[in-house]
Length: 163
Image (cartoon, rainbow, N blue to C red; front, top):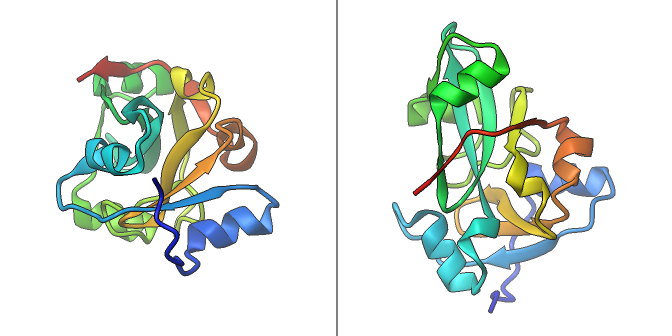
C-alpha cells in the first residue's frame, strides 16, 4: 500500500542511480519514535524485512554503520567482538547526523557524508527483498539485499537480539 506521491531525490537515491541499482520507492507518513514497526505497518510489509541503519562508534569514537532487522536490536558486545573493537555503542543523534549527513530517522547507508565501515546482520542477506531508508524520514527504498555487499562493501556479522 505504498503511496504514489513523488519523493524528491536524496543523496541515497542519487547514489543508487549512479550505480545502476534498481529500487522501489515507498513513502509513508513518518511518526516520531514510530520506528520500523510503524513503517512496516503503513507499507504492509514484514518488519523483519525493514532494515534499520544505525550509526555507532567504537572505543576511539570512530563511526561505523550497522544494518539490522527492524524487529531486532544489536548486541553491541557481539558486534564489538566480531569487528575487532573493544567496545561499540550507538552515537548520539547529533553525532550520527554529522557523520552520515542524514537526520536520525532518515539515515541511509547509501550516499553518506563520511565513508564509514558497514556491517550487516547475516539474516538480512538471506531475504529476497529488503526495505531500507532512502535518505529521508518517511521514505524507504526496496532493493535486493546483495546490493549491500557489492555497493557499500558491507561485512557480515551475527549480532541480532530478538526484540
